[in-house]
Length: 350
Image (cartoon, rainbow, N blue to C red):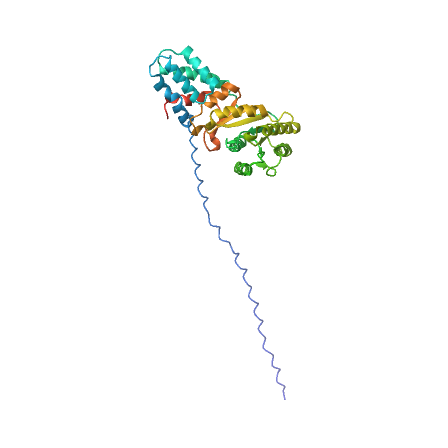
């Protein structure tokens, strides 16, 4: 029997290779939305500078504005001169200055020409004021120390804040000293100005030693490289003797730590006080050797003539005049600008 040939197994088909997974397409982040930068806000228009003539309208009306009515073509003698003398006294010029101006009118004016009287007064007042027009020129001392005096309510602390703003605007680093330790409100007010202007305020305990605050202020200015130190003081004229001694002590203490300081002693006077401002100037000059005057609140008074009396009697440089609430309203004094404003429109109210 022939053997059957062995059955050959059928070849097994090879398994197909596993499919090759395609690499995922890279995820492309959508481009960020284009955000248009907001259009820059237009700069606010510059605050218009108010004319000094507008600020002195009340003083001009009460003083120069009455000359035409008073003279009115009448001869400059007898009753007319007496009335003119009374007008000069009532303008808060002070006795000495009023008599000096009246003498100028008698010698230089004639007839009943009101324009001529005004011209004589203008020239005489301008001559007196030019003698005290000396702009502040901070020395190379560092720190340049400014001591500020004045009675409560004169605008002293506000003036310090405005001075700080002025110096900071000139690129100088300023530190303030809250030396009026007897009024918590004065310390708080100075802190508000410090925050507004962006300068440090050195203070002590309420009721503490003002000389210690002055010393600490100068020390801080030297240690931290400040250019200017402005120090507030108390203004209690009802206690004249202690005030004088206190101010003398502050001057001694400052000078001991910083030879030559204070480099400027500013007296702040409220124009509304009229002749009382002259009395205050006498007391403070005795106490601390005032080197410069600041006359505030000229915009709200008819007694601006006191500036002429102060200049004539004391000869102390007038550094600034305050004619409003903002920092820009503390203006460097100019004799010509002041007299132009006082005699604007021939003395008519603006």
